[in-house]
Image 1: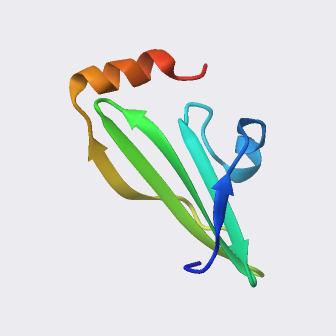
Image 2: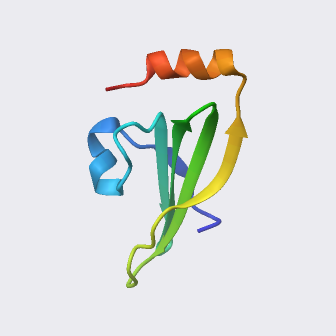
Length: 85
């Protein structure tokens, strides 16, 4: 939903948003009957941003890849070691 203001999703609520436990971060927003959710995971040496929109009264769609962001290998290694378990 293009007008929703997103806020971080607390890690304890990832399951309720279908966010995988290995996500680095997640955000969600809702405005006037519609919302959107995002999360970011590290896959190899890239950050992968997932997104979905949601409207009242319809089934919640699956996430789709919004963007892949290549990282330098050194940055990816730092993120790998800092990931929550």
